[in-house]
Image (cartoon, rainbow, N blue to C red):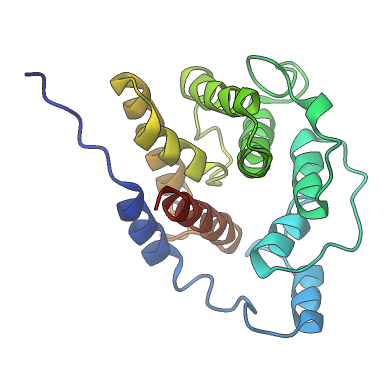
Length: 222
């Protein structure tokens, strides 16, 4: 009998992620009042003084804060994140039927990888809400496309979409698909620890959201 690969369980991934981020996310105002949370979101910067258009909707989701304003940024990941927190359904026309989500020649490879992964992260959540079999197949196909076509370490060092690859490594029927997804997830999580020896604050918030997403899959399977 052929040896089966050792694929970490979703429970093991949750434990690993939560151990990695326990210190970096400690300052987040999870239990604060709404005004304090809004101030934190407004003032948020990473360790390098940078802010991105996706920071606010990500933090709104993580801190359970209604988003009050939107960005006019045109990148697909920003559109999908805003649609997620604003509970909009205008995003479906932006989802391609195969391949990646953005035009391959529209960005340098690092920025393209960032947008693709960030968009996948948000799309996974939108798919979980939509419960649409066709969209679910598209998300699975997109995850597999990532493992074939894009390296997760093209200079971004952000673990966007880690939960999508972890779930695929657990649920896919094909052994090679499981392995490819597992390795992609491992690389994403490991790479965000390279610069500081631990996940930076933004990566920690991304991983917190991924861990919550993984927990939701366990709840649904009970």
